[in-house]
Length: 84
Image (cartoon, rainbow, N blue to C red; front, side):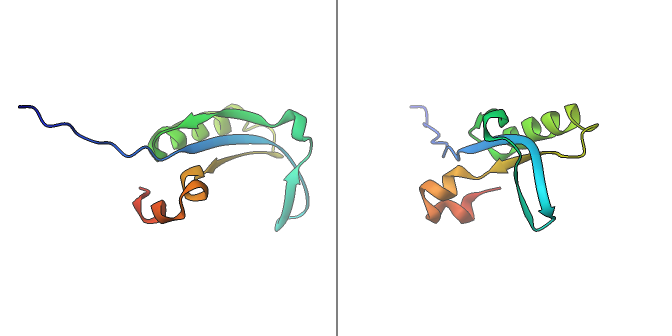
């Protein structure tokens, strides 16, 4: 009998766009219609790789920023300690 391995999917979203900052502590997207949705990923490692690729493609624009959103923490705060 083979064992079935259960993988817990931890949803991560990668988004980015040009920021408009009053100061470094108060930034928001310049145009929400232009936010780049890179994708949804089941692991942090996949999300980080996508984030890194998107950030590297836009390195010449100092106002562009990409973010990894730990969506699984928003859906189920109890998963916070499972992220890696």
